[in-house]
Length: 622
Image 1 (cartoon, rainbow, N blue to C red):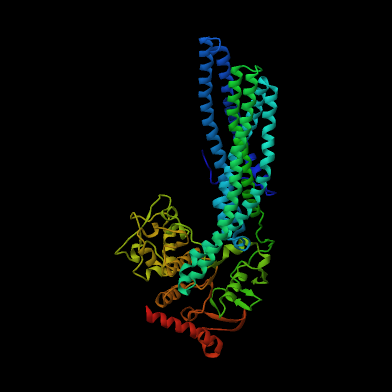
Image 2 (image 1 turned 30 degrees about the horizontal axis):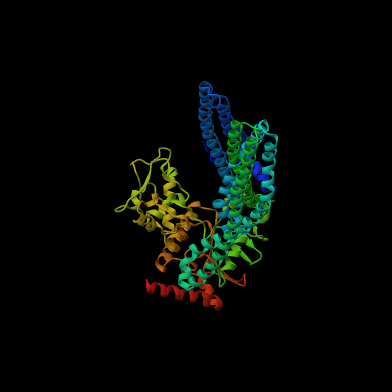
């Protein structure tokens, strides 16, 4: 089956869970119709076997006609072979239906997450998204598998009823009325299952989010000694989820038990009635055999109808969760004015921060959240009256802002893949059209080995990248920019320490790297983007003093002439800033160079001196 990851999945119906499931069916209705036809033919032929067997008994075995017996027996063999072939086609078709629903739902969910962008975290938790991707998508796709067999079960049920009508009107009425009675008995359990399943999914998403938080903050928890408290809380939440799972399992077990037991009682009743009529001479021995065969054949459609009800009950719960996610909307973008054509001043009236273009500016505050709030307002990640030049940021279309202003989040996501992919420069791009691979040189490499490296890279003799061939490939400029970005972030040693250099695969969030290594990779990625305005929050907080000083020097050179704003309290960074804004309670209280503020602002001096002492202690311990 061909799955096109880039094919437009269509516009989903977001009006409800049932409507979403119906939309998935409409998007592949020819395949669903084929599955229904194949399932119907397969189940009807299952019922045809007892009919042929009855004919073999009445017209061949009882009168002793071996020719007739052989003919009817051959017909049964042929029908069995055809039915086996139909069963294979039915299974293949419904597998395609399931996979299409799976991938189509994945694509609309990923597309919605991309559309929401930065607004995603503010509207839905990580655990909710993970639960949808891991559990709900699979449940929905399994539900669609019941479409073909469900329709086939209804057709086969009607066909068996018609065949039974030719044998006995009373038996036919019992068969035709039996399944609706089963539906009435199981209906309340289906509704109860939906409620229990919905509550279970909610608890599961909360616990999933907590697992992610624990995995990301385990080192911090160990350092603070809070691992035991968090483990106890997680244990309690797990117990609650387990108890809710038991309640879901209890309802499910009743449905499955009644789904097996009630049809057996129903079929036993039909067999008993047929045997009585045969004993009374109302039907022949062959017809009694056919009645028993019809009863056995009814087992499949009845079981599938009950299973379809069960799957639909679970599927609609999952679909409602997907629909709720698809209904989320990003922040409105009503901007109609163009951003300033030239580098211009960024101004945040709420704090009084004014960012001059082309300069390295630092924001210092005792509450880091105050500085990050300023960065969010200046990048329009939060509502504000901030301006760019003389244009309010809210009047500028968001794509223009995102193209020129970049926030380097210290917790920015790092996806699993090769390091070059994590950096946003896949190897194909580095190698150029000829597919030249970029390889890591373990020893003896210098900046002179890198063709056309930038001046910043040429200063050092530690660069460790080279091309696989001797000629400069079309993608060499991409490699030079990547090398310069890694150099500016002092991240060359990170690449050298990896077994395959840039080709080394790293885990999600780069958890196989240290905190300082992750921080430098994030900074290098931001520098590689080379935005007109770079806003970075604590870009060196996880680095030792020596590495931090190196980054501070190289960052200033790499961003020369570009607007850069750093939220930091490190003296090593502040000493290299062109201007420093000291914020108290979210407001600018003083501005100037680091040296001037040290001499004139006691509050600033106390704040920075405390950080400076920490730096000196760190140097002493390393």
